[in-house]
Amino acid sequence: MNRLSIPLQGAQMLFVAFGALVLMPLITGLDTSVALFTAGVGTLLFQLITKRQVPIFLASSFAFIAPILYGVQTWGIPATMGGLMAAGFVYVLMGLTVKLKGTQFIHKLLPPVVVGPVIMIIGLGLAPLAVNMAIGKTGDGSAVLVSYDIAITVSLCALLTTIIVAVFAKGLLKLMPILSGILVGYGASLYFGIVDFNPVIAAPWLAMPNFVAPEFHWQAILFMIPVAIAPAVEHIGDILAISNVTGKDYLKKPGLHRTLTGDGVATIAASAFGGPPNTTYSEVTGAVTLTKSFNPKIMTWTAITAITLAFVGKLGALMQTIPVPVMGGIMCLLFGSIAAVGLNTLIRNQVDLAEPRNLSIVAVTLVFGIGGMAFGIGEFSLTGISLCGIVAILLNLILPQSETKSALKPDNIEQD
Image 1 (cartoon, helix red, strand yellow):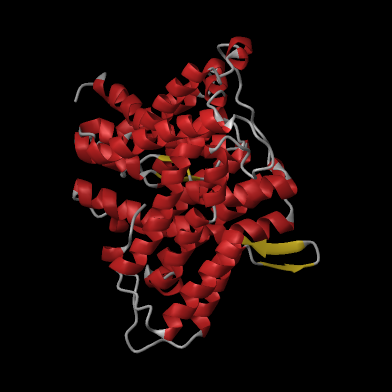
Image 2 (cartoon, helix red, strand yellow; image 1 turned 120 degrees about the vertical axis):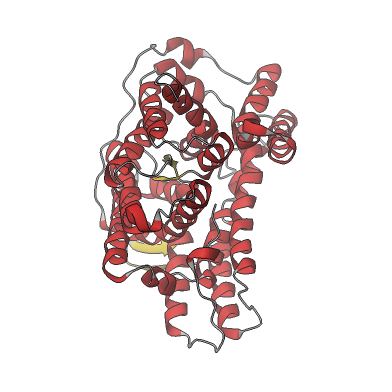
């Protein structure tokens, strides 16, 4: 591999991740240019902590969509960033605990019977948001942004394209279903005349991303901390996946404690600038598998490319012109897929739901999450994924174990 090919390979990897990377901030109202910048910075920090041994890219985590939406509405963006920074410290603490006590700590605290339903809630809890946006409304359904007939046509174009590419495409294209759905949906939006290019015309070619400094409010911090549960397990699954692809055991070298810490530091850095939390991207792992590009230096150039594009003002403005139905159509598949991953976690790990203990954990977690249960004391309340994560963990620790336990072992963790 010559010197020129490494930067080109890096740019290609960003192209694979681009659709998912920008979709998350578009949904939550964060700045896409900041998301590009923090994905690049987060990946470089991850490489620094892991001694640039793992060929993996970090970017926007979908697990935090619902908590960010709630946090921004309740406390504003700065306080939400402070809460996300605290969630990043949870990763770092997990990394330290793994270093001191080994991986059994995570296996005991987060078995499949806990992780499965929590992941399902991440997807199912967002289903109304996806449907509202697909039919041209705001996420909460309070206002109509695009007429129903046009919105449903555009969203179906985006949805069907995403499905077709995911199922039937070959090679590198198969790894970019979200980006393909965005492009086709955007094309349909242009046809119906629902794209406003005025922000792009007004935007400068070079511009600073709209950085936001975090503020720290204890309510937002306590709300965000439990959300780190599901992404932490997703991280382990992605590290196992890239280990299988390259034939190297990254759980041992550089070690799970380093990769978890790297992920946590990347999320801390992202929230310090007002960006979404970072997570390891399985799309890029798929691209590494396809291209056999195992050199971690490629991901360095992926990060550099992301940081560079973050300062292109017209690109950031162009991302903001993507109509709501385009995102809604893709989200109908995306959020359902997240729920399916949680269900598959229970199935693959053979969690026996005929066992009253397991049934109780899964049932209560699902109903609390889907039903919108909230526990509060004064100004502070727990709801959504945060509440579900705490309830699932507590029930797992309190309820007596059955004779046949379902353990979360490194060889059967379900990845995103």
